[in-house]
Length: 337
Image (tube, rainbow, N blue to C red):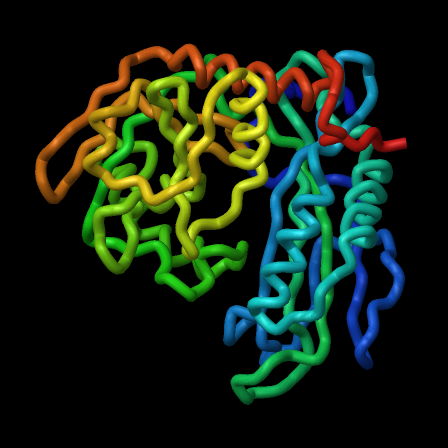
């Protein structure tokens, strides 16, 4: 592509050449096919429109320092995609097919992978929807998986900066034994009002606490949370938290940096003991948190106006692997050839 200001791209949809699709009918999957059609035709009574029979994923392709294009841990996204399908009684796409579809769509749209050094990447959005025509509340029998891509700009256009977060007791993101641990649209729809209110009040995100005890940290906006203290990386553990692939990767890096790693319930009261804390996910990798306000109690916690040393070190290490600036001892990246 020519005459594109890659660094100025927003995190939004930008038309590309192809997406890839595969259908499930009569108890079996077909073959992945590339298409230039940006639209999906569904019956008005399809269960994806009425009962939330749908799921999605998000991952990125990076143009490396060596010019090669790399996907980051697509197999992990494929496993999570299958886990969501199981919980929603959808057909499970084999992980190897998921990875192949990601490879196909990136290769077909390689001209849209932003140049190295711009901070921009190619974002992949795989989704699965329940198809067919029926009205009863029961599992669908037909499905379609589509993977489309869009170049997106750097999340932090002026460098990685700490964000402001509010703990708002008026909202619950998910309930135990519900769908909080899988990636389906209903979880995100349920978080929108809290996010909009947080933005109106000058905060980047709303921090959600557990729906039972209302004191344990769950997620920060649409991202996982972690805190650092006493050379220990601590992240909440709960049945209603989405297992973040970024968080999983950061835990490995933290161990290899000589830190202890703990996955356990983290009470809001513990915030005062952290030296650093952040949200983490695919879009921003790490969003350091500089300030947290608890709306119910009026308490506040300040972590500074600059990213913490450990957060910045982990951010750089992960980006080095994603962009091929260093060896990948974990086998996390897949070169698209």
